Image (cartoon, rainbow, N blue to C red):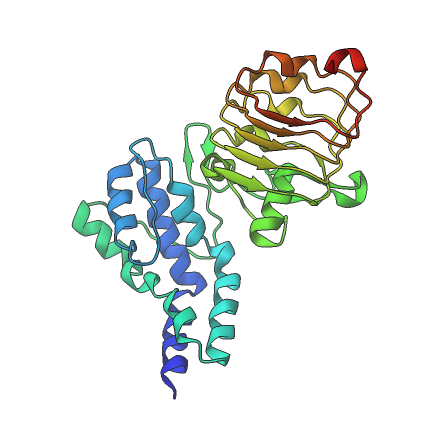
Length: 284
């Protein structure tokens, strides 16, 4: 057996669904208990491969949980097998960080003492903290169904899941969206921005070449600095007025006739309005 074959065999075992379930379960437990400092210690253990920082308020957790989320297992395993076929040791080495934390139960025990939690793999996770469900039941989560056939497009939430996992029928907690600083969903057949309201820390957002008509759900995303909404079907841009940090805006090729909300945006440096039927009196 070659070195690549031997390493890939170990990696496939480490990236198995059972092992990912174990890792994710313990990460979620620490998050639920607001043990953010301990999560940051665990994140630091894989810093040789990945830079993940868990802030004192828990921001950054979605990066580590999405890395070891069981729904990503098939993707990781396919990458490992592909690398093994061509004997790509460099690519295989990128997956070795899991060896560091695969015994997470023992690692967590060295940080704190806690009662062992039995886990049955076939059970669905439903870890709740007050009203927040980290892994929502498919029966209760209306977003899991792909509505392309009935609506002729996707919601923002569905498009994110497709971009991340290639499927809409997966559990994807909305708090993942809070850690996304930059989002690119151009040409994603989006016709409904449902879900975008959770992107409260997003700085750069590209939703160009979609089928968006209503942007009202953007109104509370006040950290956005760059926004591309070109080539959509937007007519009303009142929702942009609260984007006090917005400096770069592309609204080209829409159906906008009133751009007066932009006049109140002090940090706006550039706005592309070509392809709209804006009255000359508004721009002269």
